[in-house]
Length: 292
Image (cartoon, rainbow, N blue to C red; front, side, top):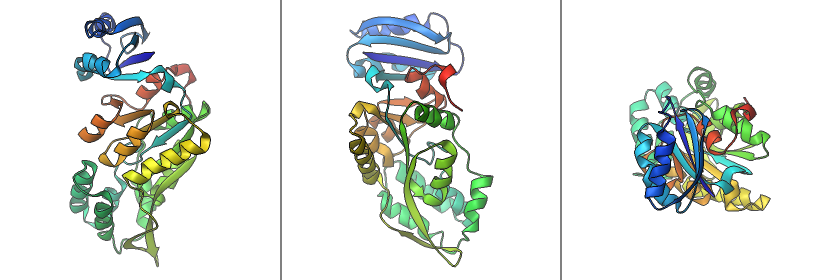
C-alpha cells in the first residue's frame, strides 16, 4: 500500500492531515488510516491508488512541508546508493579546490551547468580538473578540515540504515581523495569515485582510470543489486543533479535532495525543506531507532 508522509519544519494546523486525506479522496484515491507521528510535524497517510495522482493531489502542500509518496515495499531497503557532492555533503569539492587554485568562478560555472545537465559530464569534469594543474596535494587535507561539512542528517541516515542491514555505497563524480574520508566518516561500506593524478606532490590536471559519470553510477547500482540478488524495491538511490538521474531511475525509490529541476523530475520523491532525517520518517523508522 502506498504511504504519503508529510514532514514539516514548523508545526502545521491539527486539521492539515485530514485536509491532505480529503485531497487524496477528491483525486479518486481510496484513503485509509492517517495519523500524526509527531503532532503537527510528521504525519502519515495510507491510500490505495496511483502514486502519480497522489503526488499531484498533495503538491500544494509542498510549499510548507516535504511530502514523500512511496510504496510501503521500499521501507526495508537492503542497498542505499548515494551521490556525495551537494547530497551527502554541503559542498562541491572541485569548486572548493578551485578556490584554493584561484579559479573558482570559472570552475563553479562549469559545475553548475554540468549539474543542470547542460554539459557532457566527462568533458566538463576533465576541463575543470585541468584548471587545477599545479595545485599542491596538501590542499586536499586542508579543504577537508576547513570547508567540507556533512549535510544535516546524513550521518544519522546512513548509520541507521546500515544498522538495519542495508549496504550503503557512496558513488561520486568527485574524487577518492575526498570520498574515502567522507564515506568512512558517515558510515558507508564502499566508495566509488574518480582519481586525481598527483605527481611530486602536485596535481597534474589529469584523471586516471575510468570516469564515474551518470552511466557508471547506474551500472554500479545494478551490479551491487545483482550481487545481492535484490529486487528493485529493496534499493534506494539519493542524488541532486543530472549526473544522478539514471541511478535515481534504476532504484526502487529515487530520492532527490534540494535538487536541480531535472533530478526532481526523475526522482520518486524530493526533499526540499528538511534534512536527511525526512527520509527516515518516510521509511517509517521511529526517532527512537535512529543511530547517530
